[in-house]
Image 1 (cartoon, rainbow, N blue to C red):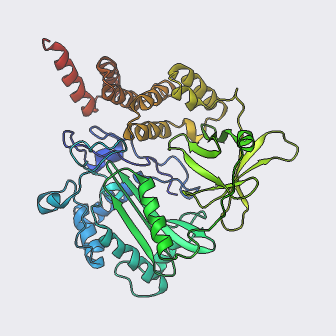
Image 2: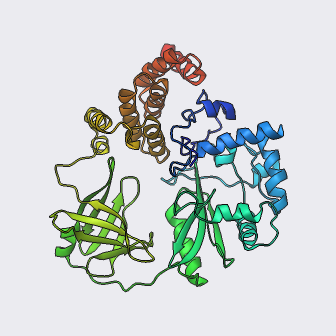
Length: 454
């Protein structure tokens, strides 16, 4: 809502230098994220931005003249009784001994067990499920008019009611399920995931923290809790109907959800699945002639032929009243989004496709430098290094005057074992930005490695 950039942060393994928050804000080495800027009019629309929280972190430090962990301990953690929580980065002493080890999506251990996050306000809270529940409970009580430990009732109301859109308050996300108001927020650091879900008015909820990047697992836990404790409106009950292969073949295909995004619907025998570009396929179950539901999303999906249009559409329905929230046209076999060329291992064709999109719609978020950079890092964070490298390659050709695009491409090349390419592009980045100390460090290491005898 503030119009700031940078969705999230990768953190820093123990072998890497850790930037200051001012270096993070400016995108200055050794920061591994781009500069945080305002590129949309504040209040214009919703966009999640961890970068905005970094700005708030610096503002609080400037106003209080103290370290951010100390400020949060004084103003939030101690008043809430969150005695097993801290924003200290990295952990030290007794707290370090108590910390879990993280595991990334492929099941391997996070490099160095856990990363350091100088972006403390966005990604730096160490806590327990019981401690985080104290925050959620206090927010519920304050909203009802009881005296809160931290917030006023007016602030709680801003958080737990719609603000600039139906799905978000100030600082939390909102869901209305069968007329019941819930609020929630999740988190993803390297090797760790978190999620809380709570009813705004009735006092129940759950907090799940896991030391693995496996969000499907915590959603299954939350659904199990909701069913066991009869949360109102949370889990609707449907009768699963049988499928026939002929009808599934009619709805299978790719459905365009944006200028650079689609959902794939496919079947295996009599089972139907949908899959976004970033996620694993999930099964969807038929609950009427043309309507399906998944375990992961309360909003039904309906397949329809539009009136006067031969093309099928996939409709996303509101879970409460069945109204159409979004409609996605089925793509023909000849249609392709730019990212498909990346998936196919054709980076030069991807560059041409992204250039065409940028020329036709220069304001499209899909072709913004920051979005492509964030997308590349999100791919790299889930182990898709080659795809990340090729997205950075596209960004490098779309924005050749930016030093950061060469730096990101070089980082992915290095991670993929392509040291010569990494060296060439780190040198390009450094030539454009002599303050890029991280590039200077890696250049020195790679050139030193080349000069050493085999």
